Length: 213
Image (cartoon, rainbow, N blue to C red; front, side, top):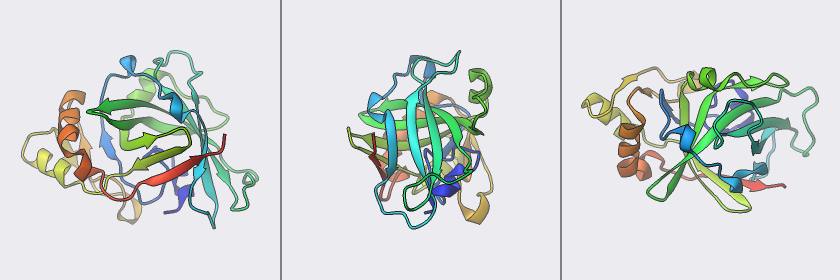
């Protein structure tokens, strides 16, 4: 998957980060951002573990410096690089926000709304959260950051079809990628479904980033 495609303005998924990846698209996050805690293992600069042969993105995660944001919300910065490791001349830097949720020992990222192009600043928190959320599963150690995109939307589709989860069906994005379900239910109901179906929904191999600093 071509990492640069992640620079499209929707935070499809963290990162987040890779073309052809599908996230859970939801009007509400998995948990209350006001009570979230920052995962400090994610702070720093990350690059794809696999050798890149085309332009790619590096991810920087920082503590949020925009006023009015909940304490647990973190800032992400996507910077384009050439395969030789030098920044793309004139490349567009994009800035976004996310926070983390833990469910039964599993960790998830709630990407908040859309990225903005630097040097623009993030909008007010209430405006950004009103754009909805993209959700992916992740795990992190001191030196590696792995995340899983949605590999099987069937549990989501079935739950919506059977009335167990509120949502709507939508067309996939360009190239047939992107979520085909938009969840409109509460955080609690979405979390309940994920607690039982996360292994199936987030199937497949993870995308792995390694720490630069």
